[in-house]
Image (cartoon, rainbow, N blue to C red; front, side, top):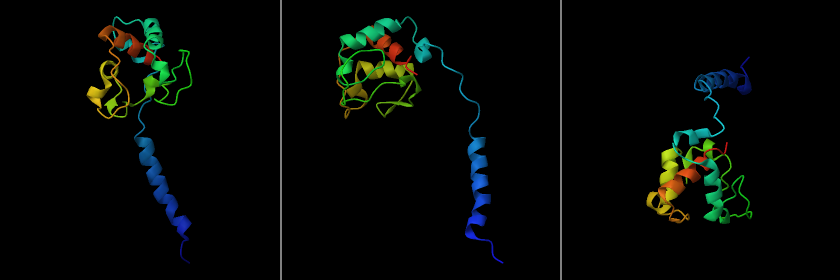
Length: 134
């Protein structure tokens, strides 16, 4: 008597599941309250939160901890510390986030995000705040 097709699939599914589980490895260590912001020395997270309001970032982005409208222009920035990419093109590291904030069109000419004229210090403080969002 032949084995039904459904009965032949379970060994293949078991092998796929084993390979998937084997690739999981250890979970990353939990982030500190400052998240990856700890990698940006000399920054002021609270100042970064205030600067987000001053530069009008909430005109395009919904950002936890910063009051503003509910815009639909740029993506919401909740969980920024957990994202793999910035603007869909740049690996999400503290230094890369600072570079993105300084001049997004220099990194991706097709981005809708403008160069806001941030100073390096302001960009670092804003990046520090964003990287606490996890």
